[in-house]
Length: 252
Image (cartoon, rainbow, N blue to C red; front, side, top):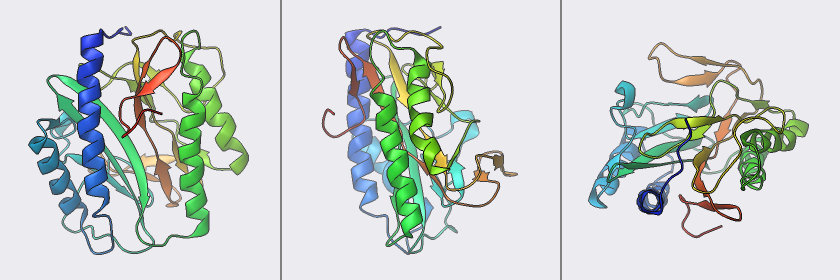
């Protein structure tokens, strides 16, 4: 069941999003060759707690970190590790959530580590642009799948693989709520968007195949061809005229 959030709930989610965005900006300053994903995770957790929030992901279904740190061919759910040292040419996705007074925010960004290959630069650029192509359809009266279709339509000409096993989602008092928001599919399907709905839209796009597999830790998910994957996500609320991003430094 899709929940329509009250103005009070939206404000708490907005505040959670502000903590998340401040944390993202702080942690991103430390993304450079030589740092471990565990160090980034510790930075994030401490920063979130100092701002009055708690990490949504830590302990969620047993996940051990505050950040999902997904490097190169890791699509999602990379576990922070003291052994995983970033090197020049890598890419890393920071995907994480913040709980503030019982309401969640969730966002993801893929970053270059030093200088990266041109084809990987394009992958990041297209994936981020696809997010905003999808968001352009996030307004009252549109269907959820209109967002999905817009993302797929934008990505498809590049020949990239669009991950199908993981999708965007509703969010609020729970980290994952209805509806699912896939990154592919026909337009005109699914729930009709209404003011007060809160959603996470998050294209995950692979340089090669769309196929992924989960490793033995039951979390880390990689591309089956071991080619890089990019992931961009924002949490939004549907407004009377469109949408508001709740996980950005400024309204977009």
